[in-house]
Image (cartoon, rainbow over all chains, first blue to last red; front, side, top):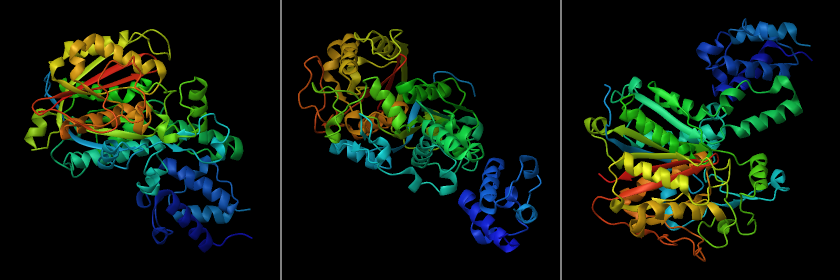
Length: 82
Length: 420
């Protein structure tokens, strides 16, 4: 069953918490991974791979650069999840 | 700012070792003659001929915040922990620049490792084989590169004068300290964070060292396994951890009113050019390094009252070192209290020069030479004064100490320190 936007944000929050140590409640739709959540380009790859696994979605490298905010990532996953 | 032959002093120390998570607990363990060698538990060590190691007393993952720890190889974790302690011990309250008493452009980092991020490399190869390409961590390269500990320590303290990583196997840590001294002496930096780290307790390095017949197989008595100078010694015991010092030009230390532990007189270097891994049995290369030290500094053999030996507990190496000392120091060796602290810490490879420099600095500071444990029967070929079982008081007045480190490849590094 496909995840809802809320479930995706919750999942991303857990992933970002694990990787960057940011409290889950700070991971909101409008937050930028690099500017607000201490996720650098290398850690972003980790976030993407963890999200792929969790939400059964493929996020090609060329699309990763468009995922600036948590909202961008949530929308992408919503549209592309299996 | 370019001046040469400036006096270099030690203003801070830090360590995380098999004996303790900081330099104070490590020193306490050394004085108490405690062994940090433990059995290696777990399935992955079960088939190995060697099932003991001097594992870190405090796991670095329990000390560093998780987001930082997961991006650092264990060797860099140890280095960062030891560097943070040393930095604070030297009286710095924030990274360079933010703490205005040192400019980032005048601060260097020279942290060495013998093997670098070997466990990261091997663990990620397991990930590649078992879980596939996509799961290999994007942090793998910055974690496994041998300059990673030095670079990460540089990031911690905001070092911009230079970040360097000499690699010379088990002499690496000492070579780093020598390199740092030169950076200050030649005017490239005023302050350098220097030392060595290692984290190679993994089945592959252990299997490889064991197959070289370099390691002790005293699995039944771990705390008795590392026994430098004892007739029953049968090889080294692998250890892990880091030792770091803050080196500073004397003028810089004085200007900010820093506490000074001792002076670093300098280094003597040489190469055996004998065999890739075997020690040269007469100690020719070691003697040359020692002589180079005497020639390059104003150290007088009569001042030397303590020596932290390389002494790894191998049958050949321990004796070759003593022969070299006798050759160069002559009768002056008789007043040198020799400590082989690897009897307690195991052999930290590239970390050895770091933690043994910390031990040597503390020995001068407290005027106490730590004991060598497990010398039940002194090898008659060891014609020198080995401090056994109990710490030894060192004389008052101006005294000097030497720290020796030698590495596979035939690298010989001898460092000298003196009270101020």
